[in-house]
View 1 (cartoon, rainbow, N blue to C red):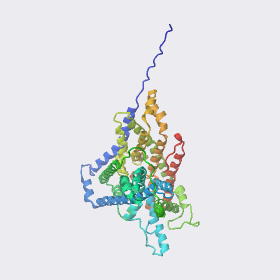
View 2: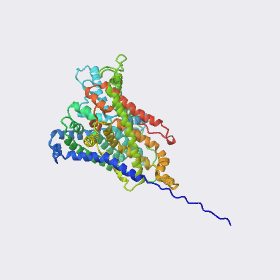
View 3: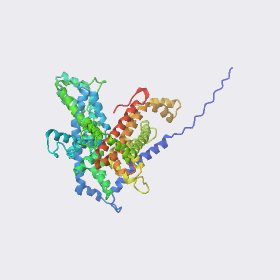
View 4: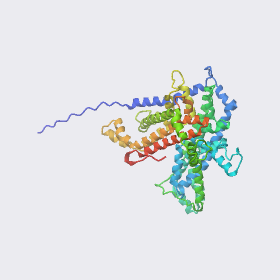
Length: 572
């Protein structure tokens, strides 16, 4: 009889669960980024100069006309932007998504590319085009009509001009939501309308528009929110016109003599309005306008424009001309001439502005270095934090991990100028003196960009079924090894896309940056703003084109990186 010797059963390796300390570390980091600035903001709003408790700062918001008027102007301006953005974006989205408009893909790409353009740079471009005296449009008008030297056709330094300039760079939010909504509208409903005798206009009015109405309203709320919390465009166009909106008023409260308590009190209502607008957007998008039963709907109905085709082409051309082509052309023309009023000819063509920016202007090199350093640092650290937080929340690795998701998405409700005030008040104490260093900017940028990074990574994790990771765990791999060997390769495209998104968002940020930079920590966006105050539009155009070139180069290079399965990032 043959003896059977049982092989010794290996003892299980002692595994250390690192996710619990990682959870506490991430919770502490996100708490410092989000909770600490808001706590100091609330504290400063409730004390006077002597440090005693007071409600006088909030009372001043109501009784002081110089504080009340900027709030009212900001609200009126923001609603004007929302209405104009919806009026531009809705027909444009329908033409691109549901008609036989020529060049639809090019139009969609150009509209989407406007996301890369910083709104403050667009405001400067329209300053070049529509300033009452030196604007290129007004110069052309005077040349063609023989008008007097100071007569003008358009004036960008008005509340109407401000609404227009901001809408040029907020309407893509409405366009994207409406276009996506139109892509999801079941064609069966439109087919049923056609079978019952409904014409294209009737179907559009009674079927299609009601179905995409939630997307239109949500996009308009986003446009209103963007306009209400924006600093750059109002600072460039409203201040020369002699009026404030609330963001520029908060900034002015830090000028001499500084009034940080009043600035903190003014920031809190703006924070509350932002939360309400975001809640309204979520409520609107959460409502279900229709439910598809049975299976995938057919292809969307493509309406034939017929005799209206050229009218539609003219409308699209005007929109792209005003929002993309003219602003970019104005920046390029100004960069290649010595002054705005000179026509661009072979005799006036010069590289003087490029030479000045890159060789004679010493602040450029420092600002460019600071911008790229902070862009790379914020994108790398922010993507890593978002990756770990999204993984722990989606896979529920630790009890209470949902707290990380709440902390990571909370900053979406904090306007940039409000966060800038909170961060300034937090880190300007002798015990936490980071003001005047790049660290305070890194903290602000991580906070601002965290919601976008987290949402993208969270969506990516929801697209990967947990069974793949469970199979790896069954075969003996630890969570960290599973994350490194299984999950990470599947997420490569999303990680790169998140990194690019955070990088571009960082280098174009101005609202919080304007309160946190010093002479040694200037960034390209702040240098552009400073040069605008001195009227050096040639140097501004060069720096603006450089900022755009860096942004487009990052997207281009990211799309050339080899990723799993030959996938590519979506083009901007």
